[in-house]
Length: 458
Image (cartoon, helix red, strand yellow):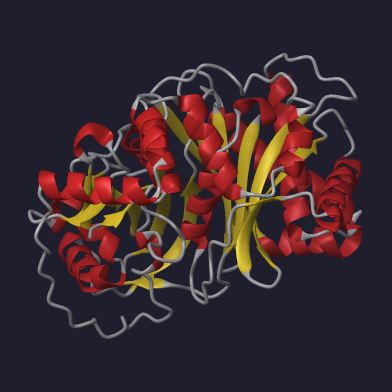
């Protein structure tokens, strides 16, 4: 019997529309080695690693009559060169040109008749750099069985690990009659799913969102938050299909110094920095900001208790507070209260990773964010700690990595944060119409770090 999509995975297919493509992305910047790092080498590397992510050779097939959730089947016409693509920037190959390309790539939905992923090698970046841009549909990334492909193409050494010898032959695709027969057999065992599948197939968004949210469990705290809707914000507007992308670069040592002097955690420092940046951004737009102004962030984070998992915290960011240290203390107090009371929204027991996992954890955080009503929060912030040692792809050293977190319905901004090899990298994915000044906000993130660091050295 083919592998059927889980209710959660199928929901991301049903929720996708023209303005909210449900793929998560990443931008990794590499220093070109003397031996080169070109398209052919990237294709060869991915072909060698595909056996580690077998889902990446499978596509979604819908059951006739939508009698059951879709199934994963091997793509008999799988062509790695369709999924691994090549782009080049015009001279001088600036970061701004790269960000514009990333925005255009992320605006385009993935082809649902093929395996739901793409990778772009972007050549011509100034200062002897090359970028790799990844796109993976959230229906594919379940954390344990199907990590994001960015997790498997990287090595801890400039010498790639030995390729996995694997001859892949696609399994025969099930016929429509077989899919119907399997669906009928399952319906006999679980008749309630027939009605549920019919409602989902009819794109009953309310029913689908409730189904997704229910799968994440632990919704007591979400219900409490829903009783007090998120404050009004220019970030909660009708969005277009097009995106803008901007980045900010900071140093992990700076956040550690802030933690050492003022207490809290590195993540508290990140949220406090974003509070300051959002405050200045609102003021730059002429928005009314009072002492009590807040913005609510949904902050999915990897946590460890008895098992590794992703938990979502709703945090009211004190953007009305002018003092950076007081902002930090407000955030630290709110996060500590959540953790001590257990008021987090558990996103299933999703991950048991021992290696490099940031791309997959950002995808899981985005899945959590897509599961909740827009009335609960203003902005999504995923913060995933990464390895503090250099990583390589086909001998090329990765020097920066920026997450691209998808937008939810009527959400104009998502922020992904990843620490890697001493740096803390912010990727800001924004609606093109609502956030024409997203690059201004990115610059204000770096200024907000400087503001907090000024209190450390004072």
